Length: 98
Image (tube, rainbow, N blue to C red; front, side, top):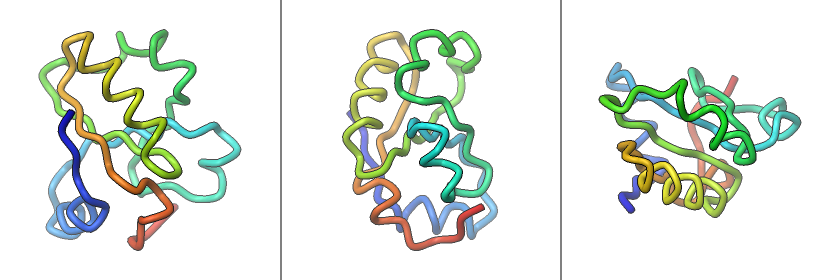
């Protein structure tokens, strides 16, 4: 499983790169703040929403600490999707939130 540090994600966003971010936390957790532009698909719904994802794109998966997003990354990778897990999750995120 590929991994990326929160600082690397923040730098790419600051450089104006388009990153497809999926936040797998529960809706009430995301309401407290998420990375700008991130799409919320709770971990329990990944299996049912995977058809909404484009296999030609790479997705950065985010959760609170990196555990749930790691599980989501393993699952999606096994389904043929290109994914990267953001290590440390939102606990390690120092960038802007919305």
